[in-house]
Amino acid sequence: MALPRWVVPVTLGSSIGGLAVSIYLTIAHFTSPEIIACSSSGTINCEQVTTSAQSTFVGVPVALLGLVFFAVMIVLDLPAMWRSERRGIHLARLAAAVAGIGFALWLVYAELFIIRAICLWCTVAHVLAFVLFAAIAMTVPDVLGDQAPADEFGRAGRS
Amino acid sequence: MTDKKRRTAAQKQRAQARRERAARNAPRAAEAQDRRPPARPAPRRRPRRSSRSWGTGAIVAVVAVVGVMVLLFLTRSESGPGAKGSSAAVREALNVPAATLEAVGDRSDIRPPAALPAGTPSVEVAGKPAVVYVGAEYCPFCAAERWPVVVALSRFGTFSDLGTTTSAPPPETLPNTPTFTFHGASYTSDVIALSAAETETRDFKPLDALTAEQQRLVSTYNVQAVTGSDGGIPFVMIGNRYAWTGATYDPSVLEGLSFDQIAGRLSDPKSAVAQQIDGAANEITAMICALTGGRPNDVCSAPFIAQAQSALPTS
Image (tube, rainbow over all chains, first blue to last red; front, side, top):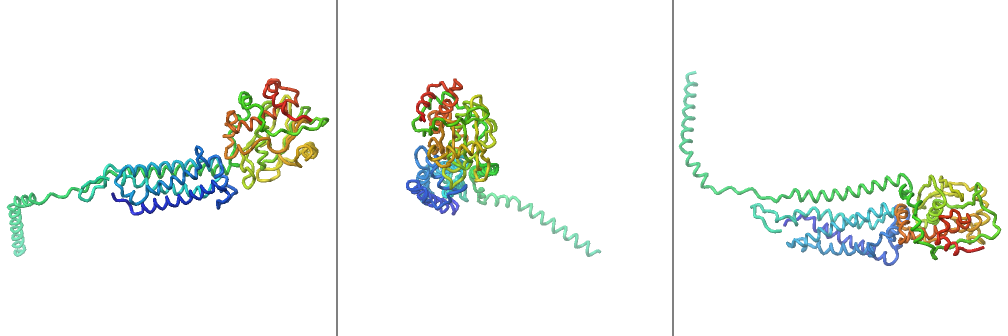
């Protein structure tokens, strides 16, 4: 399995960045939303977003869900995991990335049309979730094809 | 010329000899060709194009969805405060089912008004007892209080040109609370009148000037001794019977909700929004029924309205 060189650093870096942002937002959620370094007036208003009804999902803080998501992605994006020949790992990574971007899209919708305010830190997390999704989506043929890429002599291996 | 002809004849002979040699050697060349190892097959490649297209397509789809959302958001923002209620939602708020109002009933967590002293002169407009409202579009507690006022008044008459807006953006408390505006609206009823003024826009620009009568009522009754406030808004008077300032319910139930969401929840008696807004509307309805002498009967004779009336303060 030959992956582009950028895949591991990009996915692992995005996951680590996302985890850091999520930890920050989770701390703010459980302590005081005022600690977030962000505008609290106008359209850019982290406090309004992080204290809204949409800041929790079935009772769980969205920031905490983000923390769990990025922590799982760090594990799935480790070099050893990318090298793994276990198809289940690659499927799990893809499923998590799809779930992550799906949830991020819902949160963007909530920010724009329900809360009508945008949280910059949340947006950073959304962008990182998108980078993860895009990078993983581009590797699908490499890691989840029916068989590994055939070599120059036509000898097909198992991915 | 003779030499040239001779050279041409010699060239023709050499060419003929080459052809004959080639013909003699042809079978051997074919054998040699057969003895060569077979050519390598072209490297087999998996059909990646569809998978790669899937990834690209998914990324483009996500970008497109975000782009459309941002475009809609920007378009909305340019056309107004950003939370204009739909006409369907306005109709919902103006037609909360009586069964829902009954299910919510009289709630003890709705703040009671102040009873105006006995002997307070009647407050009338065109010969009808009047509900007086003085507020401003920027004010979040006005935004909250307009909901029950509108729900209650819609049981006694009909609004027209009732607009929607939001309270001021942050740093105002409860920013961008979706609500109605009485600016430009008119109200007709057989039993009561509405005298309303929105003194400033959501961005603090002057809007409606108070009439002399409204100014007199504010100066006389919106005082510490009556409402517990000196000129606070919203200021509401139910004729010469009751008055209050501020919101009569917990406005935090509106946080994070759009106009349409709030309107949609008014008909669900289990929702916190309905319990607070409809509960406050029932209290205002009870006050108006006290003002109109129980008219109209179909509204004022409901047991939950009578119960709410019994809980109102007396002067």
